[in-house]
Length: 262
Length: 324
Ligand SMILES: Cc1cc2nc3c(=O)[nH]c(=O)nc-3n(C[C@H](O)[C@H](O)[C@H](O)COP(=O)(O)OP(=O)(O)OC[C@H]3O[C@@H](n4cnc5c(N)ncnc54)[C@H](O)[C@@H]3O)c2cc1C
Ligand SMILES: Nc1ncnc2c1ncn2[C@@H]1O[C@H](COP(=O)(O)O)[C@@H](O)[C@H]1O
Image (tube, rainbow over all chains, first blue to last red; front, side):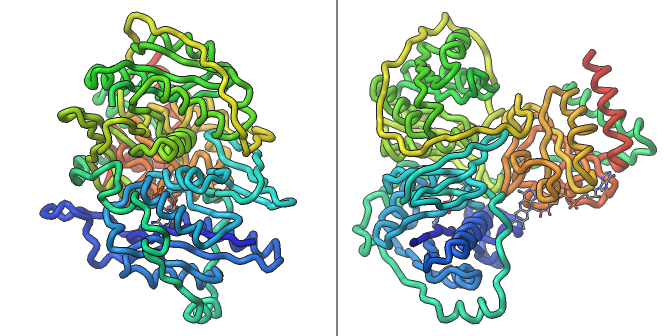
């Protein structure tokens, strides 16, 4: 079975994100590019499935990102992905959520797949819209927010998280599935994995290779960014040392009354 | 874009506050765009809910109790919404920015070839074009974006970002005709884990607990009591979810839910950046922590330094008394 994991390459999620007041853009200097944390869970789910199937199944990672971030994909290879496809093209700048899903769908059709696994949410865009739209563009069943999965007789069986519990669902392959972090902690790359990753292929892909979908880039976008600004600032916190439970509780209540919250 | 259609998320006819926020917002937008405000309710319990929604300022509420909607994942729902969009005409579709809403909204966008704006917290109409406000980068930036096409657009709207008000002259309630399709994802079973009368993302007050609470008991005990006193919901840090004290559906943060209640109370939560991005846009943030230097001190409005086990039960009593 051919499993493809879509991974987004994002600014370091542990770094505090700041906007340059002049350019209104995110300050990227000194901020490393990493695998979108959610996508490490997607990769973990893929690798665990491959190990369980033990039938020669393969795991490919696919990222659409600017050229300069390519080497970030080595981490996915070090974790155990067999190979990688790096989709990059100057004409991709300004692509919106729907365009991203459409372009990824074109790439996935080109690569071939039985199962596509996405993360649930990207750390920078955070639209959570790519997986659902991707399933539509691929014209395959889309199972979102899976917390566990199994393949039995060519069908995916998954538990998918809902707001207050889970659903058990199933669909015939090929399938697009997105995961939640409950699928299991991503593994660390072993030293052997890190060494081996240097030799694993990262295949380049450009828009011309996948039929140059019209949804790519700012020109194909259905939504255009007008402006970016920092959020409103919160004033400095009031700090109260509680001498006992009641005094602490009273301090909270007084504060909430002041703000008309009780 | 003229008419506005609200997708109503519900379970067996039980819905949440965000539905009424969307209905109210739909009216405002429809008036600005010079169109009508519609809503669509699907699945078991839809009819009763449609009738309830008629007291909000909508022009029409469309419903279907077709069993396919509850038997198959997403596909029948999309088919109905797509049919409604086709019947109602060029429109803006509002979905709640919840797990289900995002799913329906993004798929519908792909089918319609429409723009998809996620986590919308504001709308403006500028010379006929619809402009949306969306926090990005975990709330570190606030973006404004515009729908380019004049026909269809989908906006996933953040719960608690807008007010809800009844009114209007009573919407017409209409039953949709049957839509059939080849649906592919079978729902075999559904299990409830959290007592989810109120969704975490929609709650006006969230009381969230962290590792400092030491075990699951505090979450079903003192924290739940405090949340109940406010009529709110319990949330958690990832440390608490990872420890197995609460289901992951209660986790707030980068890899959990984004909440923006009017009041967030963080109990024994340090305020790591990955937690912060899931709650920083809350109205008022109160922290109860025994460490005055915890990172949450940097982005809360009130920090009470003390023992959660002593403070929380007293606070519950005071809130109950104040509300009585
Ligand atoms: C990729 C990635 C994604 C992540 N995603 C998330 C996410 O979505 N959400 C999330 O929350 N975290 C997330 N984390 C984890 C995050 O980094 C923190 O580890 C986590 O938020 C810490 O949880 P905590 O505040 O409950 O625990 P701690 O950091 O251990 O804090 C416990 C706090 O409790 C206080 N305390 C202890 N006892 C008491 C008491 N009796 N009374 C009062 N206060 C007390 C302590 O002073 C301390 O401040 C993520 C991490 C990574 C690497
Ligand atoms: N540029 C991209 N390249 C590869 N995968 C992506 C990209 N953007 C989004 N994805 C996938 O879609 C998921 C959800 O992202 P988003 O919809 O942006 O929140 C991510 O977790 C990835 O699996």
